[in-house]
Image (cartoon, rainbow, N blue to C red):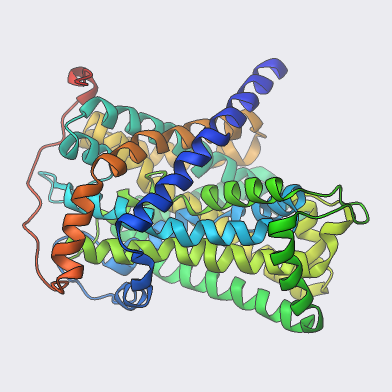
Length: 466
């Protein structure tokens, strides 16, 4: 078993190695220039994102789609993952992480646009979309859509469910001495209460939970920085200098080169905001929107909030604490940095982790459900939801390092077919953007999504056509 775990770990390191990181970052930069720096419309996008009223055909509001995507995206990586990047790449990793988020806005915009454009309406009256439909209907490569759906369904149970449940139960056990199975049952009941009602129920909860947890956590980080305001200017200077020169050995810190700062900052940024992985567009396709560009703008703000704001605030707090110089890594660094400030830091960290992790379970449940529906049809939806609830309990009571590594592998592989579609269909993305945004037709209504019965088993006739 140990050899198998080692093999899966090595496979995870390979998948998330330089080739995938270069492909992801390269796509971010390519789409940024192809779309004439779509980031300049961020203000307009944020304004659109807070509108909760129905705007067009769809299942949930644009704001509901955004918060559901953010629920899945903002997780432990925004807290513990940032600490891992700083420990390995030094303070400079924070700047590279931030820049990755800035460029990633273009990719998040593009994948959401395509998912809305190529979505369908099922015979049950619900919207269904995501990279699998883009690959099938946009690129005419159904077999790639099937591969993406399989990887998403597998990844969801790992990275979106069991490892998240285990994070909560372990933290509650360590902090409050409550046994994992009790935490698991409570969490499973709460999860069932939300997801059994479908996407409307999930979106309704996320609309309230996500703004609260983000404002509470970011506000808490600001309080921590104010309490140590005298060292903030030096911290910002250190981050900028280390990003371009690396950082030499200091105290227990082993030192990091500029190459390591770039590598770990970019890697953590890409992994955290999920731009290019193809997960968030699945829920973007359910949004009530007049045209693909409106929802694409709204979705693009997800990367801004996740990486440019939340990850950056975490990075500032961790570097400003000075604990990173003692050689602490990952969770130990995060805990030390926040607990230096007593009960305030403890409350921020605990509430942040609990809400971030639980929201991830909710968001990813929809991703996995839609992937399973694409593969097996609507009959799988109810059994899938109950299986998801059961997996929460299993994840709470079992330590699953292999599941985490395997989920990392499938999560990374999801990006490949999705990025292919973004590059191949970049002309479509530009044409849609020109029609609705650059030509000032943002209020125009696009043609209705076609009604299409989801196939019972698309894998059966998904032979490669390349």
